[in-house]
Length: 274
Length: 215
Image (tube, rainbow over all chains, first blue to last red; front, side, top):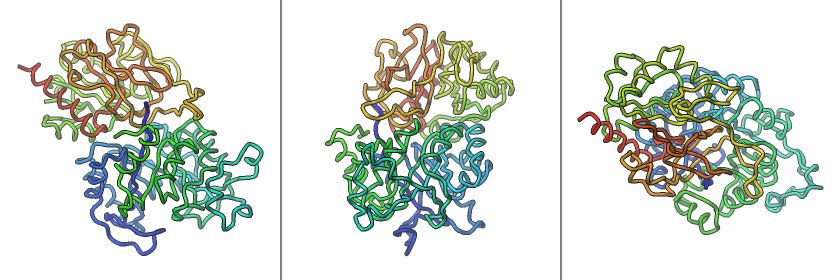
């Protein structure tokens, strides 16, 4: 049986892992390869590097990080952050990445996804979608209850989400559900879906969003943004239909180990690789 | 020496690094002379079936690869290359494969459901393989246990005409063939080079098989 995947995400800046909440007060957390090795030995199913290097002068450092990782770790590696051209993708894949995740560049030009999938194959093209709820009046302060509620058929029409970029600072006007349909058509092999309402809150995934996206497209969904407890990951799989769960802080700060996470899921009859 | 053949389509670095990790001398090459000199060959492949066939043909590597196989030397195909070994594929229209194993390559039915959830295509992630112990005898797969997980990424799967070629099967909506053997040709739908220790153990065993074949 296909196992549900647990994917730790490492934020990498200028070739170093950084930890912080919402990219604020970042502290150095060591060498990416060393961090990756730990997750590897704990039984992570894949790894994701999110390159948040700001200076374009230092953009090539990630290539070296990927090369060094691929020499030591024999598991799937996804790299995201700042990918703008087919040449960026070619260099990352050549260095040893298995997949790249494209976010802003896809919003700017959806055909970029099509060209990338055609050239390198859909299997290595992940489209990262950051989505934000359009209607907020029904949840307001009750963010927690709202996240847990999967709307029934009648209510589904009420909730809509919009694609945002730059950490939610820029709204695009694009409907998130229409967007994922388009990205699947363009040849995306997977969707990494982040709720910008819940990211960093530790209140759980936006289950309604994840469920709707998962039911809409046939490609796998990686749920991201908001995990605070193991129950949140469990809900992402069982209530929202996610194929994989990506989390950063709960693993970074050693709140839970990968193994502990998988044991929790196994005990609740979620298929995991242990 | 094991030749890792470069025809512009595979994750060559991952494969050569994995072979080095298990103590093999791996050379990434597209030179027919180097290929002819190799004791074993690993052919990795990702992307689409017709692109892969076209690249092999245009780079004049299809013949050296088939010659190598016909000389009876150990060959290991990964992912898309397992599919290329078959008679014909149906990705983006009907296309001829290398025609080494009789059978065809077809797509997972994306409209199927697993419980409440859609059957997601591509089949991506870690899934279990059950080994056919009779067909695995004297192969690099003989010491594997049923139920171990390996990493898959694919939308198409192979349907051999005869199950004598099948050494491993996997469940995903249906039961499909995830590893095959034809004489000295071995191929897996999953990626041993991405399957951590279990995957490396297969490459290690393949390396030993190659070394034994030499002597």
